Length: 455
Image 1 (cartoon, one colour):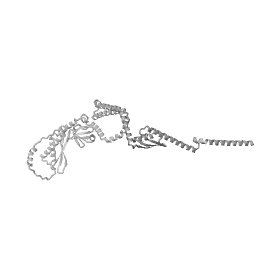
Image 2 (image 1 turned 30 degrees about the horizontal axis):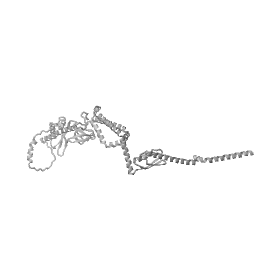
Image 3 (image 1 turned 135 degrees about the vertical axis):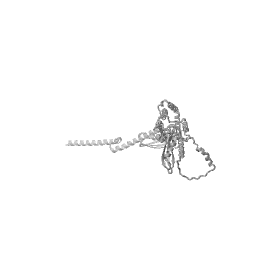
Image 4 (image 1 turned 90 degrees about the horizontal axis):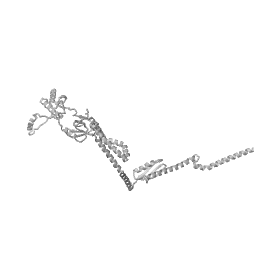
């Protein structure tokens, strides 16, 4: 029993020694655990914040050193002050231009781990420094131009060569013989010249290493195209109308036409306008867009043209006799064709008369339309007078006072009034000669007499 108690006491003491040794070991290991990160939750969180703060400080320092090194190599940014705190970069100081200020902000934003850039840079206010910066920039550009002058000369020579080749190709005849339309033929020649010039310009830009500039211009061509489209809409409409008119050929040179409110002989059709020579001898240029969209009356296309004249006879007169008399007079009038035959129609009942309208046709190729119409009016009026058919008019009371010598003058003119006067009805060609003379000038003309006519 005693031995058992002894063994129990020995085991108890051994357990105490083991427990005490473990406690001491933990006491000795506790500082090392704190340095290495520890094992308890509160100690571990506090150490991570400290380590993170140290990493942020080193990262900010690296960003600042990198920016300072970058700015040191850029002209105009060498005096920029850089401070970094928690990834926020603050730039301060003076720069010579707005472009330098934007460049500094852009360089700072491109660096990794930068959260925000506060660009507090201001432009240099010192006049001397601003002038010096401007002078340095101009000097650099001048040196660049002088250094690239041989390339400029080569580029200009290439452009001139291709422009010359384009003119030579446009002047050839055989490549364009199959194009029947005159407008399309001229457009093809111009297109060849433009393509040749643009080819030379692109080669020159490649020699000067300026294709990026050309690409930038093409990139902005959409906006400029919209602006130019609105500004030159009328020019585009006229160009398209010129093409369609040259294809349709609605009139020929010297045709007498009415376009809108304008009437005259056609002189020429250009790429922008239609030129008319009015009966007064004036030139009228009508935009082709208005010609194409407007109403065109061609008096010359059909050689036969009808004229009409109205005469009011008394309400008690024999209307059938007045109609027959007018038709006989028109048939006997020189210049009036027999087919279609003349007509006389009762048109309206007036307040004190009945209106009869006489119709007749004229061949414009042989006689003058206006002269024949004038002669027909005179002859119908005289025939009605000789037949005793009254042509009443509104009645007015007029008091006359005889002037000295008035009777003698009337007596002297009586033989002339009674004599039969031969009236000229031949075609007048004054305007046609003027139009032909105008067409003989060097101005372009899209009218083609051999082209198919529009019906």
